[in-house]
Length: 277
Ligand SMILES: [Zn+2]
Image 1 (tube, protein in one colour):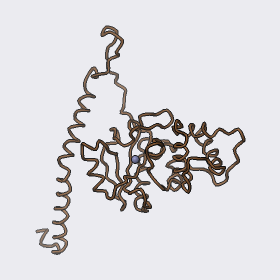
Image 2 (image 1 turned 90 degrees about the horizontal axis):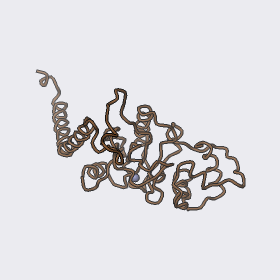
Image 3 (image 1 turned 30 degrees about the vertical axis):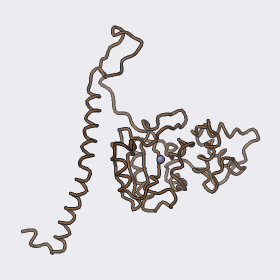
Image 4 (image 1 turned 90 degrees about the vertical axis):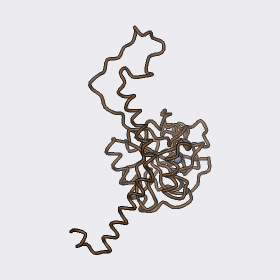
């Protein structure tokens, strides 16, 4: 028998591992069932012909019909939005995202030790962005993948966590053909509401092709340089200009996030403005 030839220690370890994996699976069996049921509902909606609730309001039945095309695919995400959880452990975050009453979720959670937990199919919409705006996109939940980094907001991000994040970003960039500038933070799209991810190594990510960064050598902007327009072109919602400046500085300056552009900040902004044009 195979077991007879196994050293006792390895055998016991095997039993422990099987027990552990059974436990961790059953722990989420109920919420996984809810996930499956929800997906089933969406699949049923997709199969319905003509699609339910997609009638043109102001036209009569005689004026509209449905004939299915044979050429189509599934919509893909075009942005990645990075968050910090502001929580203390991976388990705590998973718990938050498996409780109906919280109404929040993300596609992926990356733990401090580099483990990645996927919580939603890339093609489905997570509730991670909330009210926000980037350029003229006002429904970032529909157009993005949400990634939560397990971090309380006041601690450095570990190398293991950043390494796993980069592995994930590389896969997503390739899988969905996500443009380099479209790797952004929650604070970028919701400047009046959100500070995350805080003190984040955006430059490290940009060097690997996830997000943009400014050049080492910077040129003086002309006297008529319009900082407000530059922020807007990059994507910031400038309806609250102070908040937009703070969000920009949280991402690209970091040493100071006061809602005022210093001459040094303007050099950075002027350089980035051309990259986003
Ligand atoms: Zn967030």
